[in-house]
Length: 119
Image (tube, rainbow, N blue to C red; front, top):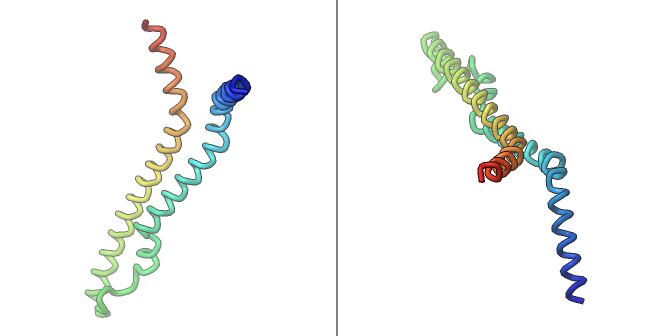
């Protein structure tokens, strides 16, 4: 009975090792992509450049004279630009994380292969 259990455990381990690359680039990649989209959505919720853009012509602090409107417009325009650029950088980070997910097994196998060649 114990031999049967050991055979089954060995077979499961071998099948998991064989199945791992297939999972990494299908289901795992889809999971990583969803995680990156959620991370981007979180960054958009935090930075909210669309909210600032929607209120760009609204005077700040109730200053409805022309000086207050000009200053409010300029400050909100600067905020929209800065937050938009920050969101673009955040998008680049999310894309980089996804590509790191894709390239990670290749780098590990390449390093493992080179370590055997150097010995």
